[in-house]
Image 1 (cartoon, one colour):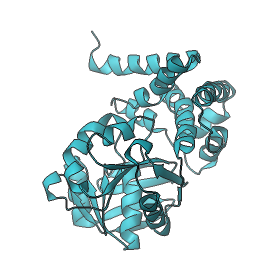
Image 2: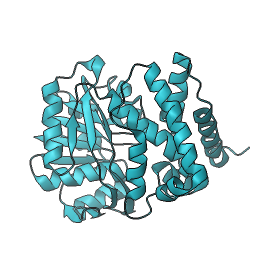
Image 3: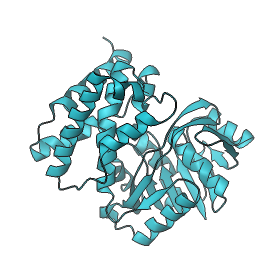
Image 4: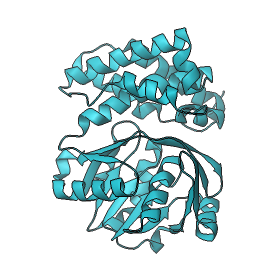
Length: 306
């Protein structure tokens, strides 16, 4: 079996390294970061932190080198989904592609390019340390299920979940993964922009009364939108907040990492998505709107300050 990780940054590298180490499949990593893929080819992909090992796998920044794969796991930033799948779709002509990305709306983009899509969401987190070296910050589960419009067979979902779980990345196959995805969305939409705007790492923002209270108010807004959509949440976003706060080290939310590097964030797929669905269901989301617009203002400050 061949499997390709599309987007081998922090999260993608966690899956790529574990799957390669397990040895059940031939693992390919695709990323446009050429120095990173070159380092992986030369020295292997190293994880440190919550796990310590180096795995050997195929890595490339040339999509024409990719073989036909039974599965793809897309782990790019949501803002790069469209370009990433456009470059790699040919490798999944007979396979299924699973998103483990932040936010909502990625599966719809994937389905424009491939026949079978798997809806997914994941809690594990990390950060780049050096070329070919990723820090594994937080362990956690992954939930996947068929993306409804593509009628992906449940058997295909369960097969991928088993492969991922046996590699050490515990994955739960669900007939309906929308609840898990929205629980993670609500968690992300509460913690990411607050961390990005205050520069507080996750644990500090959780423990500080003002920002911890803001987390709760944002979570309630997101829950109200999910309820209006008829989505039964899979777990409680508050438990994810506490799990992240109790993890060792000082994990910076991905949006904070983006802001510090002056990169475009995923806020449109997080708070922006909650605002959009709130408008469609008649649920007010003033806090999500405010944070969405503040983060967009930050992005504007370093891209077009005039």
